[in-house]
Image 1 (cartoon, rainbow, N blue to C red):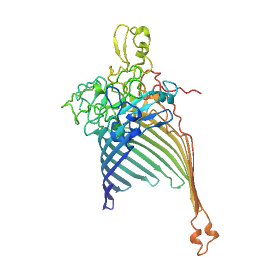
Image 2: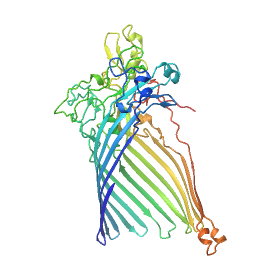
Image 3: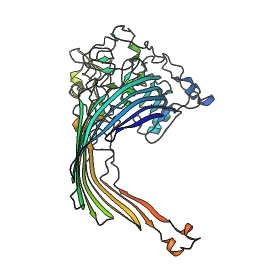
Image 4: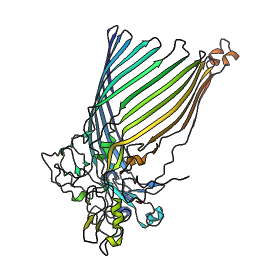
Length: 574
């Protein structure tokens, strides 16, 4: 990191502070030593290599080892992901402070250009999940070679870039000797992340790509109509006002403070990281059928091959609508598990508000009582772009409504073809895109909200014998997506609203220091250097337990096939 700064006192009432900084962070994670002998995939009994026989092989030969095996309470394997990442940030900041009478004006600008370069793998040797669906026991399923799921992905290349500009003006006005008012306005322009080679994609129902004209209808790319290289548009209307008031009567016994502000946050690069490397720039394969253990690209029950997925026929870099690439999407289909960014995303924002009262007792003790709250708007979440049509599946579950001897719809049947009694072919129950080419694909969408409300109390005492700080917070945090990977209900996101994962209703913290009077017991000339300055200090914390998370992960009772099953939520009753 290099940080160069210059603070200039232009005159007694005008100061300018300018800084230029460069930061680089580079690292590698999760890279195992290559396996040999018993560690190779072939020696473990898998059919190799990739091909019509449904075999398995390492994506990166130097990472070859035991595939990841995930049971309900344990997992093992060489690695399920590797990361090589190098980040660069160039930043310019300038702040000007001007004092004029009872006003203290500040103006400033903050600009930074960010780079994130990644070369990652996910399940480079394959990942198998065993949940007991076959026998009722996950371990028994492993012994008979009946995985419930299998996934593998190619090497992801990501070259993310983003620009940020923030400009602000504020004033600290000493309106009265007992009253100070702070007010200001900030303008934030935060560009969504883009990839230098346009290796991103998303999903828009009904739109046919012009960049890749033979892509499944509904899958679009930077350069398509209405789809910039950032997928979501850069917004220029993010104005963030804030105001604060502090009142302290001349007696000095107490003070009152109140504040309100709007704050914008940039969209995490993790959204681009999950979107980059999707088809046709990479292959993220999740088996749509029950796989075989030895030959995971073969349907365990029918024996049908799901096709040769690796090595993938990747397109050249820097494709655009002016130079469309007619790559064959057949090997990528059915496209499932590929993240997209919702094109209509805005910036996440927070509304913060506070009202507090401070009261002094003597010269050494101060008590404080505050109400602090936060409301989150347009927070990022993962939401299914292509849920199943429940009513259609219920209709097709009746044998009287399908052709004799043909399949009926049931749980996890969203991606199966059906034939109605009149001979009409139904390409699955995912009607948003209307074909079997697109399966379950989550969108990173700014559609979540949150609320936090708290009562905060503290007592602070300091004197020559010691000091203590007692703090207590009574709070509640509610949201419908506690992080960007939380899934929300695709039909009605508000139905996912519940206590936040990080909700802690009660939090008490006590910190204390007591001076020990050893110097009074041994105060001689030679003893005092050893007896003075001793103290005992400590911190005691008492908090409520964390929220218990209840999930249903292995069924499809709602008949939606939604990503991470956010509709199949358990029902809790007293």
